[in-house]
Length: 107
Image (cartoon, rainbow, N blue to C red; front, top):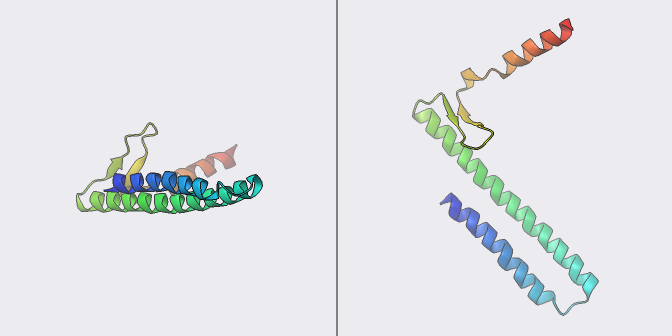
């Protein structure tokens, strides 16, 4: 379902750009270029909004799944190996920051 939404966004961008080029082909070059650039910015902004919404849905789903199924961590399979879900009590960020700051003050 989420992949379908992403495909629709990509398809929409291509189709909309084609329509713009076809409809504006009679206008002079500079006006056409400006209008096309504006429309592309609008499409890019809408695409980013849709992508952000899709990413939020995936993150919310993973968090809910991890919580309901008792996982401590859910790791991504990308090269970065990012943590997609982790129980809050396992978050060591503040502890690490405190230790780094203490070590920095000693030097």
